[in-house]
Length: 416
Image (cartoon, rainbow, N blue to C red):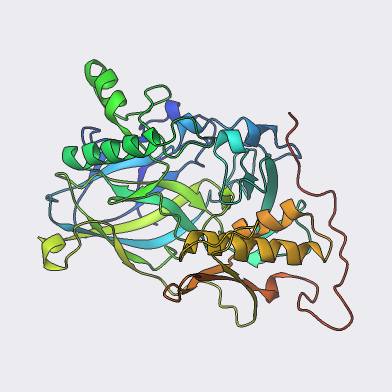
């Protein structure tokens, strides 16, 4: 096992650890630890809400989840000799839940998926699912099952939802400018169009006290993916993956967190993966001047690993860019994927699942989302593929009609 360079004690909150991580992006957050090119190491990661979500049959914690405080990231990890313009090579050597621990902290043999309420984050289908729900998943031998979504089990595609390098000052300024302009187009929208800097609840690692307020007022929230990588939620960044991140500051300042036991393409409920704490083993190296050499001026490129479960049979659903009330949109791939997901949800309810159970399943299970047609005007076509092997009943259409399963008590809903 590599040396643990960023350890976390499961008995203590994130703010009381030996090393303090961060939950904002800013070039002046100093490296918490330094590593050398070619070095391998282990990083402990906390679930993105730092233990606020419980293993129980209530969704009140999802309803009141502290979004201002996310994500709790381990890092920054400085890489000796890294300079702006380099490419940082990051190899994911191993990744998993908190080793050899069971308990009340997500990652201690369990994780969760949530549907966020419309007024606290929302989700991909927030108009159809405006209320807060939760599903808890148990891990055993690399397989996830849930008392809240019965009759399914699947092998986890464990991956970091969030990993990236620190932005430069100019890149940070461009984020804040363009996102503020977007917010200004509809400042009272629920959920908001973007999340501006929020000094309250900011964690800034080793930033000196005298600089804290200034940096907290500038630092970017970690919710979206951006040019530095960030919260990309790519389920295929699994064991064996090699990622090439652009370097914008001296040392690169790599950070990682938001580990997922499994996830469907899109993490559609927003808290749509199986969220957990755990560990990730990494190796880093550098390509000098690699950003210019390979034309990677922004956004990471990656070579996925080959350890994901291999499914051979699927049931797939398609959608086009027509709204639910029949309005035609022009090549709207986002809408097309929404419609494909809604078709899949409606289909699964015919077997006995509630719409919320089906929505949670699409967020957590290893579904494949694809842009199948983006040129045939006026309709984009998107598809969602569900592996049939995850069900313990026949899920394909037949002349006998759908099998009716016992959906159990269902997914807990928050009260209002």
